Each structure stands twice: as structure tokens, then as C-alpha cells.
Length: 321
Image (cartoon, rainbow, N blue to C red):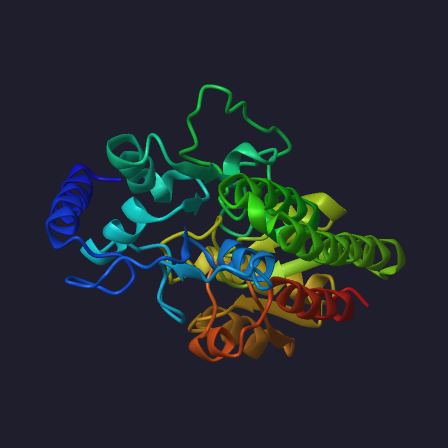
């Protein structure tokens, strides 16, 4: 993150301290509820599901605005105040969340913080300009995550590891609610394992193994887990929105050469790259959910990660057959 953005975070932190806000904004009273703050929708949803049957009131805050662009997010003063005061702060830990590490260093060193990068094996963003990924993976033991794909939850077994870590942290801060948390964990964990089995079945019975993403590509963990080949317009969640003529030509040729009938795009996408590829090839454009953020409609409906991933796998199964 650029230095000017870190300065903005520092200014927001000062403002939040002066404001004294938690979830109710400036001048509000601190709630007696157990408070959890998360940076992406998947962890927000897991926290909601794990604490749904708690006897004590629980407030779970998603920092992202539903339907908004997640990759340009910067915390507001009220967000900073919520993070500083919450009982559990859950974040991913990639380059886009450098601000989170700074806040923890300055105001949460003695509080419960959960970094999801510590729960899974990390992969780089490798897909660039419609080309296949490189086979070589890089060592991140030095803590440098600049090129790491942050969308670790797109593989169900990774999501299961994240869920386990959240379950342990919640039991640490609210041991009296352990029975309810354990029951919710057992049920949801079983669902995630069934998603993994479903994905394996799709892989083993598919007629082909190539997926086309005419958009950003936040699914490397998913495709890596089940051995699916993939081609994409951009690496990871690149800030680019317009594909180069060479990339567009490459994707169109790949769809034609392999007789691919489905081209994927992401939620909240303009679809213009997918529409261009489909117009030139006759393929159908189908949306996949990254589960990084969701639309306002899905948020208000309380859509769960397992529902969104089931829909993703349904779409992938149809595309591969």
C-alpha cells in the first residue's frame, strides 16, 4: 500500500479514538454484545453461522459495503473504531490488507486477532494475459505476500481450515458459548467437506477439464485443488478492467479451438470482456461468485458461503460437460 494510504489509516485511527465509536457510530454507547469484525464476506458468514445460537448477543460486522468494490477498500474512522474495540478481528493477511497489520501493531497487540493466511498453504497469482499458470510456486516463508493470491477460501478444504481457526478463536474469547459453537462448527464443517467431495466427483466425471475466465481470476485455489486447467483475462483480482487485444484474441481462439460453451465472469463485473468473447464464439456467459463480497440482495437474504459455492460448482459441472 502506498505511503499516502497508510497516512490515511493513521489519521482514521486518531479520528476513531477521539470519536470513541464502536458499531453505533460517534457518540454511541459500547455494546455488551460479543463483537466480531471481518474483512471479507466468507469470514463474516462463517462468524454469523458459528455464533447463531449463542445465548449472549453477538454483533458481526463486515467492513465491505455489500455490492461495493472490495479491492480498493480503505477503513473509515468508524471502521477503525470497530476494529480497535472488537473482541475478535478476522482478516486475510495479504498485500491489500497491509492496513490491518498496521492497526494490530498500534492498537490490538493484546487482543484476539486471526490472520487467515496462517491457516492454509499459499499460492501465487500466476495467470496473466490469458496464459496458463507457471508450474513453479514461490517460497513465502520470509513473510513477503506481495504476489500471493488472497482468495484462499475458494477451495472448500481451505475454507474448512479457516472455519476451524475461527471456531477455536471464538471458543477462546467466549468459552461459555462453546457448546453452541461446537454444534454449529460440526454441521458447517461437514457441509464444507461435502463440497470438496462434490468438486472431486465433478473432476472425476467431467468430459473436459478447461475453464475460461473472461474476467479477473480469483479461483486459483479452487482450480489448483481439483486439477482444472484455466485461462483468464487478468491475474487474481487485477485492477485492470480492459483486456488487451492480444488477450481478447487469445481467449476467443481458445474457446473456438476447444469448442468451449461457457465463459465465466465475476459478480459485480461489467461483463464486457465475457460479452465480447461470447459474441465472437457463441459461448454463454455465466457468473461465478468469488465470495469476497456479495450483492446487497444476497447480503440481505443472508446467503451462505456453502450456498454460493454450490451454485459455483453447479455452473462448473455444466461447463465441463
